[in-house]
Length: 129
Image (cartoon, rainbow, N blue to C red; front, side, top):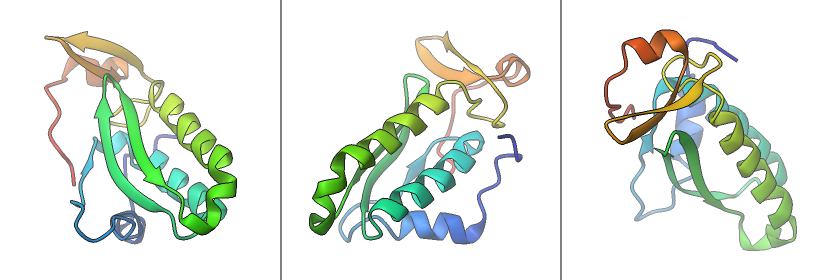
């Protein structure tokens, strides 16, 4: 899974375009999860090409991905939600910083999922996009 946390510009653009007008276009997680985001976006688009993204963030050491299928694809809601749940679960075992296998830990009441190497140098995260 570790690809250095690189999210190609076209993958980032594809994610940002999913936010509807009037919603902020923020992806508030560190680069180690960018490959998870790109894969999740592709999986969700295969189920519902016009789905809308509401929010992407880290919370309590795992990914939160809030999205809605379009009205025409409500019949696939269970599959849509299962794909999101699976990616969120994978994030709880993936280092937020580098994408290597990681574990959730707490520091000063801030939960993060980090590998051993990143955990040694961790500081509170800042938004990356």
